[in-house]
Amino acid sequence: MQPGLTIRTEIDGTPHPREAVLAWELDRARAALRLLKQRLGDDRTRELLTPDTTAADTALAGWARASAGRRRTAVTELTATGIDADTFLTWWQTRLQAGDRAALLAANPEHYLADSTGEQVEIIETIGTGPARFFLRFHHDLPGDDTFPVRIGGTGTLADGTEVLHVLHEFADTPDGLRIRLTVQFPEAAPDLLPTGHQWHFACEFTNWLQAAHAA
Image (cartoon, rainbow, N blue to C red; front, side):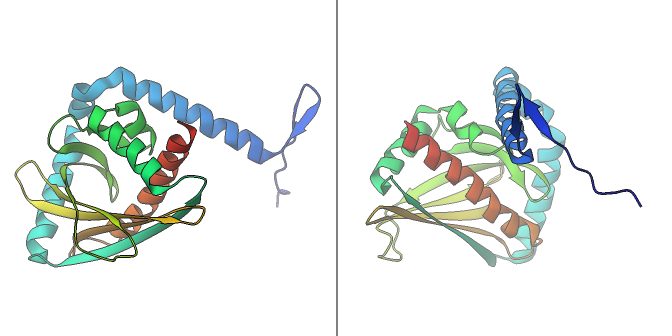
């Protein structure tokens, strides 16, 4: 049996652990992906991903029909220090209103398109195992848990109007920062990968948005 692999990295005589090389790789991967998305643009992205989004339309619509309005819920919760709810929400909602594709797409490697220039946001992102296209309309001032004073809901539909997901983003200040509770609902008949995958999706995108808002 071969011995375990070890790798030692030195740059100009300074040793660097594997974690440092991986951090460099992640930074450069993000830069490469950002460049490709910018060069492709919205129209080419839609065209390239049409086979995937067409298949997703069929699957999501089927799960919605089979569920007859019943939904399954998944929740991700974040806490952050050094930034309050108003600061984050001002930054985030300004990015949406401005149609800032760079900020919206950078939050998650599986954000392929985010066109927020109309009354609803056209989104192509991974749901389950591949890209799906849906249209998200936000709803504000919703009733709910008073421990989260700001509640922003959303309904996601396919191009034909079929409802395939619901989200609820809730925000509250803490003594040194904020709390965020992110809820997604998919049709009950959808496989487990949709809600569990989106919990990690939420964690990734909102962590990156929090960092961007803090740095702004």
